[in-house]
Image (cartoon, rainbow, N blue to C red; front, side, top):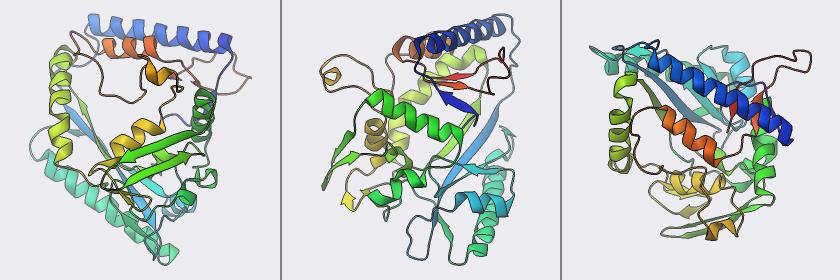
Length: 303
């Protein structure tokens, strides 16, 4: 979930200050790239695995705070909701038996998590894109992870939308509902690989990753059911896209930009093109906040 100490900002002066900080960071990144100060020829992979905490009826168990406290595992952390555990692996160099080692490390951590789950009686873990037994009541605000970042994200979504937003997904069945809590995105879990590559080859490798995203995803689908409805083979796509869509109804008829999309065009030269594209499209509404006592603290912002 990133930096936990953040605040939600709406004042134009705060947003301009945050925007200026991001521009400054972007210029510094360009300087690092142009002067070769970002390491080359070292390839690493890191992994995040999210799992549902479930009870003996296979329903979401919102006990993440107690679970983390009792497990005391530094590689375990929270996600948006109280019933999802995130496991982070230490980065590995992409060479030799890297993937075998990654699998072994992940299995060991999952086994540890299952062992800690026994301290809660019937608690267990399930690895799946969307838990088929999840209900609308499970994504109420009472199941929001209790940290500043999660609360700020929900506050920001409510402010950007200005109203409760409909979720409409057609599949074998049809789902028509309303995301009253702005937590529908919390139905999703995922497995994520973070890949460190050479800055000089970023454009071609990023474009290649985008080109193969669809067929790779088609081979890995595992979220066909949401709120008892049989929808897409990979319902997470439609759900996340709609859950964070902040456009008004009038904007749906225009060329306004989705916050979750597959992008437009290809990267030509540098990773900085992606940051510039986002800055040109979206408002900044979160900033790293360490309190009013540190007036000149450097801010990290999220758009």
